[in-house]
Length: 534
Image 1 (cartoon, one colour):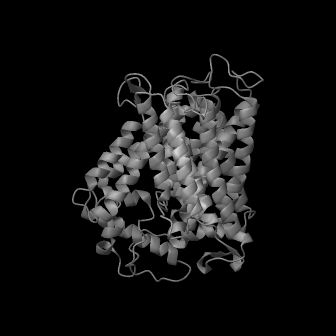
Image 2 (cartoon, one colour):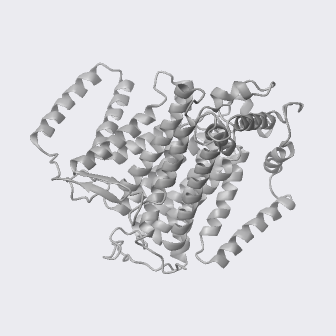
Image 3 (spheres, rainbow, N blue to C red):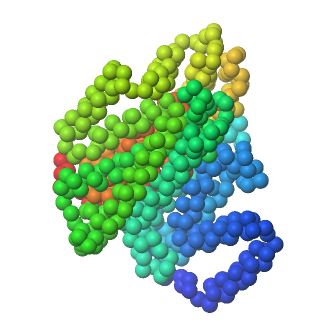
């Protein structure tokens, strides 16, 4: 990580800070007296988050990631609250991060080339550039193109913020009290707990919707009408399940790798009292008993609840994605290739055995196989439509519209995010209403950004996969465990994207955070390599 450093740090504990704090307290008291009790609690809570974010950017990041998935729910059920309030927290966190850097006279930015470059930053900028190129003469530029470009700009900023923040930027000696999250190891564990906690809350909501509430939308009825598909605050089961699969894969992989290395005799660098030695001051390479067992315990609970809600979502794409994530985790968990191959083969044989022997629930297998039976690659304009095949044929019709857009503008597409704006021109006669995207991210990006954008996107994910795989082979301890979890998360997203688009309902914020986490792990791998590295 390369940085710019100028001058002396600014003092933040002077008399003006005390006077400003007293004036703010008086102002808040006057405002609260004018509000109802509920409004007062909400106001004070939001103010606490704002102040906390100014002190520590992590607070705003946590608030943004927690509130972000409420976008669809707020739009449908609580319109008086801005549905994009999560972005305000993210913007505040980013602003606080920059303010801290300026206060220390340090701005940390990754280099594009050289020994301190980030191998993921250049591919990310490459896709952003290809997306910008696609917006030249785009259809629906202001309403669709610019908002989608802003989403990817947020991903880039979160990428930069997370890798710098987890690395502790400078050191905790810059400005007492400003770095309350502590050393790198604690920041890393805090970030994991925050991401998993968001998934846990969404999973609990989904389980309640599935079988505990006793009612729900008629079109979400499953299993004879006694249960309902879980959808959390996403208002739709498929993106909800995609978010859960992404988060659950990270949790399952991280916990499994920590236990695998611990039970498999991974060499330790921390003493039994949990204090790291001089060679590993942040406790990232070895096992820190109190911290790691607490992380594992919470991860096990969160994983179990999230996987349960994932099943309750009844989302075929998410099931397929999580199946791919499971195989990726099995491949990355052992350090030696032969053990990886045996573990993957064992899972495949076990799965096929359960299917062929009829031991899997009939409703589960029917849900998966029905899609395979109905999918087809020919023109679907003349296909008879019924209740059984409606959802599949609708998706295929949107795929066909995307292919027509590709033929219209092969190289640069109709514009990033502009699929919905262009859809009426390319829609099939029986399907005039756009679903917002093509329900296949690869076709969708090909239609929107052309062959150039699709190639840049695939290059980005190829770099992400390769660098994450290197982390699982070369790193140790918590960094390696996170690499294993991230590999599962990327696998889930890659496969689920064959049937859907997960860059909706602010899930892109979580993906940006995980990309930043991956960048941190890649940078650490350059310093901490495994004794098993081959």
